Amino acid sequence: MPRFVAYGAAYSHGVQSEISEPTPTGARITRRGLEAQFWQRGIKERDIEIGAKLLQIHGLPEDRIEGGEVSPMSRMSVFDPAIAGAEAAPLPWTEDEIDLVTQKLRESDRYGLDFVEIEEERLATPWAGYDKLDADKVLAAVEATGVSCIVTPTVMSSPEVAAALAGTVLAAV
Image 1 (spheres, rainbow, N blue to C red):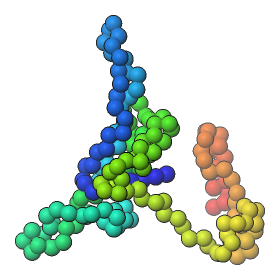
Image 2 (image 1 turned 45 degrees about the vertical axis):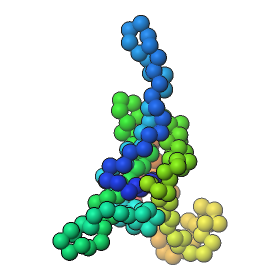
Image 3 (image 1 turned 90 degrees about the horizontal axis):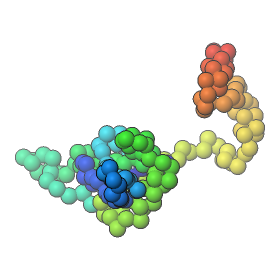
Image 4 (image 1 turned 120 degrees about the horizontal axis):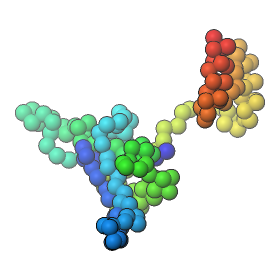
């Protein structure tokens, strides 16, 4: 899932304007407005490091007496479309709206100047060829090291699946 980091503690980027039409009793929204509101809440050290490398950091030094360097810590903010969509009020964003916001941010003329996308951090593969093996071969290779493995659904999509997962975990302890 994409994340974006901006130079600005509370950066905001308009994505889509609201459109409404008059009705006899007021107005009806035919297209809701979408705004990418960046916040410092949830920003990670990696976001700050990448943002500081890719964005031009300017402003007054944090230590104005000594004239030290400008710290990006207090000036960076982050935007995660999935989190913003889930927290949108009064209704969460649809998947199409999340995709639209992501696309518009990537296509924005401010991309690279005010904000950049943070590439998802990829974990290193545990051994060469790991990602080319099928699941059964990976399981066999792990068990060959002496580690016992249990394969079970972990997405708690229903109370029954959640109960089965809890039972599997408890049985393994």
